[in-house]
Length: 383
Ligand SMILES: [Zn+2]
Image 1 (tube, rainbow, N blue to C red):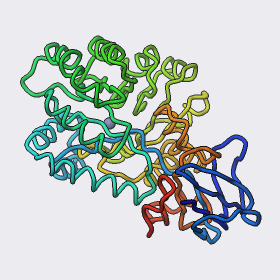
Image 2 (image 1 turned 180 degrees about the horizontal axis):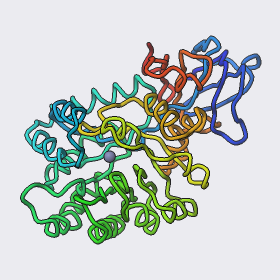
Image 3 (image 1 turned 60 degrees about the horizontal axis):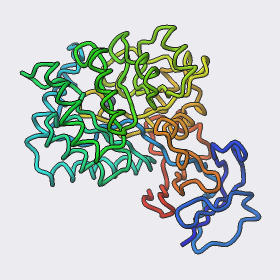
Image 4 (image 1 turned 180 degrees about the vertical axis):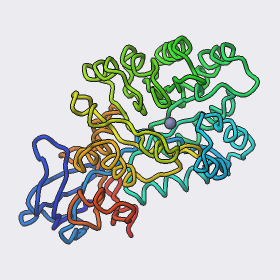
């Protein structure tokens, strides 16, 4: 089944040869982009979708999300807004609720969040474990994540469980837990932060991940300065995520590496914290991605459009840079070349906005502007 999307007012392709086109059309066939060109000379297809002059862009690539969990932390959020600090310790609350939940409940909750993300334009989402923290519970989270995405990430090193010695737990993560998790994961991630995993433990976990054939990601420099970004670059991680508190050496290291800096401004919004300086990173030549960090404690949003608006308002990105970061940037952070762009041969994942330009995503914050979502060449969601 082929699909022609015609009368596109503005087509963002993120393809160096195609650029941004006006009065354009795109043909999707066999789950990939088959043709891009002027709407007036578009070939016929089995089905047609009239964009009526609206903007079309690649589906969002949310490269950082924690979607497998149970429980509720709205009271913790309210307490924080009343002045309590964010320390990351609330993760243990979600761990207890997640362990107590049935497979069916976890699956249903994950499905609902993935659907919610799709309705806001997300066609590729990375999903981390990290609320199980036992061998069986981490494997269970990864199995469920794998039902929704190929981008599964083992985050046994999210927090040291209550009443467990940090060195003993790190040994478990590197040993038995990693061995059990690796068949169900593409990536390994570590929360490298004071109060979570220090440099020595982070290195051990990244080394174990490499030994099990996993790609590397690091939660780095979120709550304060630290070794996370330096280690991510040294180990060749695909992404260093948060990047809120960076030294000049951190920025230099990122700028001469293949490690993407992934900004998660939903976390700063929801913890009332200072935002990362995205402008500084882009000016230094760092590749920047933008993701939701959707999780029940510090950023309970699946909305990439919200993150785009925040990145523009608070992190110094232009509206165009923010949209590129949420599409091509996310794909680069996942080392994917088939998504985040709409060149011929790319995956047929796109969003038709209820707006004439991608600029509206930041210009009209909080307004639902995603009109139609096409994934794998099929219309999967329509307002
Ligand atoms: Zn996270």
